[in-house]
Image (cartoon, rainbow, N blue to C red):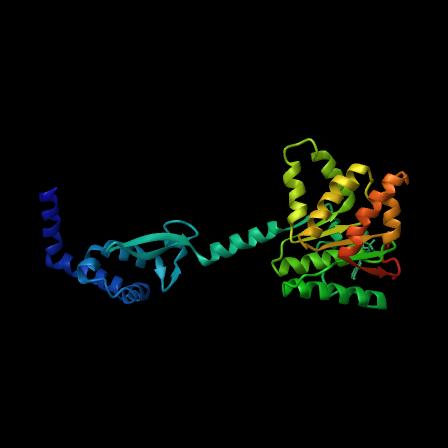
Length: 305
Ligand code: ADP
Ligand code: MG
């Protein structure tokens, strides 16, 4: 080893080689990122710089100012960062700003789930919300008050949007969902009939508990078309009952849309109408009534088919 080392030394000491090494070193030491690093560590002395020259060079070669040069990147999506560790200059690879942003975006996409909803409302938003009738204005105001409370992290009641077929309840719910997504608030928007059949499909699988927990704990839950699902004691008591009980206790808002009023929905939950069922329907409705503000849509049917 010793003689290899000394022959390298000899080469390095040749005047022409020494000159180009000196140039590289100068380029490295005047790299803005290296300058900032050395300035922020006044304890680094000449000897440490000489020993760390390869690391400083590795850094300087990949970086233009404080940005990675993509075609020079050693690991795609990562950039070198200089560190001082026990008196030694080292390079660590960390995710670039762009990589982190991309990952955040993806995580956010996952935080907003829309299940079993028609494509036509996927891009629903408030800017093309039709305000031709008073009830629509009231609905929009309720929606924006709800979103304001969420934005400012105030406790807030959910909404119960009801009215006949085609007046725009699903559209409004989807617009609220999309606004939550923009605010980076995790939410699930689900169509009640699809949700119930999915729950029934999962009941005997290992994934049921985590499925249920997802709906219990999501910061905002939006249930479209409640009352249109096929109801059974299990759906009422073990599915909606358990989810809404949890959400009520933890003050997590739930928004509903329905073709039915509160009273009509209570009849729907009554199933057989015997005393036991009536009581259970009343109990579930109590949870919905106490956690939502009702908004009635009167407008004309907007559907053209
Ligand atoms: P509902 O859920 O009350 O039955 P929808 O929300 O499905 O009604 O609305 C019926 C139709 O009208 C849909 O095609 C929907 O995209 C459209 N629509 C509803 N509200 C609006 C709105 N404010 N602006 C634009 N289109 C709307
Ligand atoms: Mg609808």
